[in-house]
Figure 1 (cartoon, rainbow over the protein chains, first blue to last red):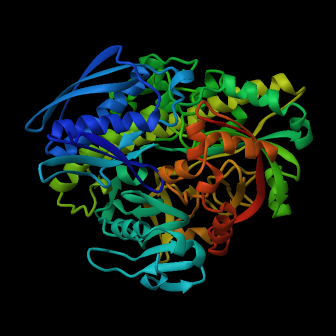
Figure 2: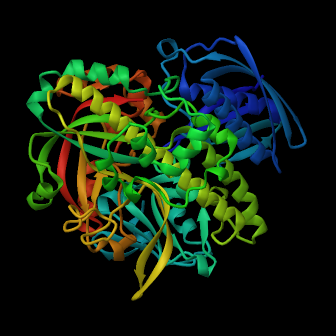
Length: 137
Length: 476
């Protein structure tokens, strides 16, 4: 069980990285790291949203994936806590579970504006996939 | 970073000689202490910008420069369309036309202190800020396009502002060349209920007192004197700008490759100005500029309503409204010739000197107000564009203190509650939905804004006019 996520420092913004046995699992973990930029309070999996994206390669797909979540967070005023990602070639389909932002309970610290190509890396080392980049907040 | 990596031209000018794929040098304006404290990534990113096609003169970085994405934050670069120049979505960034406006109140500090707590509470309750906040305005498709074409002028026409504000806003409040039809439905959807919201991160609304006047003559022209109170708003084009940035960045990565532009960093994603994508981006980006100008005009209107409630005969007059994340076509002297250039400023403020034709008559003799936001504890500065600034960096100056510590490091060092209490002891009231957000923006996480503006002045970018200290800060 190597699935986990982390934040890493950047001067102005925040770096995030997910780890997993497959690219899909690393992407799911990175999505948890994205939510943790906004809040560390509990987010309940009350409703679901589905997204799909497609990009020329896995790294561009990763940025697209994070931006798709950021878009859903913004227009639905939601936070997400659980993610089920499937990746076929460079096409991604995912289900997201979450709930509307409750300002008092979630005390959102900041708002992700977009995922960047800076420090972007999706790679496999000794059977463990990692996916990370800098997110502008 | 190591100062030996530069050619030191003078006390505040540090040049990276062209090497590798660099087409021009890169120049950082800063004093020695600021340069030593800058991350090596600023060096790399400034050098990377210098590799882009059609870049004119040099890639510049301002004294508050720090590690960004693609361009350094505090980066300035100009491109010539006729020399294969590019427009870069990465060079403008996600928060298109993020900027600052300062409004004069005619009040003295003592008058505001008398109602400080109650005023802070009203501002916090009535100005939508942070994730999950809702604006009071919802735009339908027709109004959305009218807003994107009209900017602050649209807001004034709808009753969310005053006509006299317009000449005190860049582009007279309305950016020409905006093409709402080039803004995607997703970007518009993201903005539908976002007008008149502050956003989050380092965005704020502050009530500030004039702590020190540094140039009596210019301050008098600006209408500033000691102990005056001003309202300053820092925010941008909200979700619409973020979405435009996201979409064009993606498109330009592919276009750059197919146009034979070798990107040393994908975040430098760009397209030739004279290309279909380049023109489409410019039209959408200008619409986002209008969105930001309209948003700040509406927030200014909200501030006026609240001040009206607290103070009899209170008249909030706009000093100036200027953006620091844009690409604009401007005329600049290059080697004795006037040329129309596409000037990218990413975390850098336009700083026109005295006599510039775009300035309102009242400001033209002294130059453009350059509004510098510091951290919420240390204060801010009002500068004025220096006549020399055009030859230094296409009439640009710094935009803020610049971060010294990452959010990550700030969270390890401070708690939000402690920051709030410490600032309260110094007479500064902070209101925010998030204690963690406050910790991430702790004053100690920023560089010394005083050192940054002093370096900007020594470098001939802009001169100091007044120092402001915060009284109330509303953070998203």
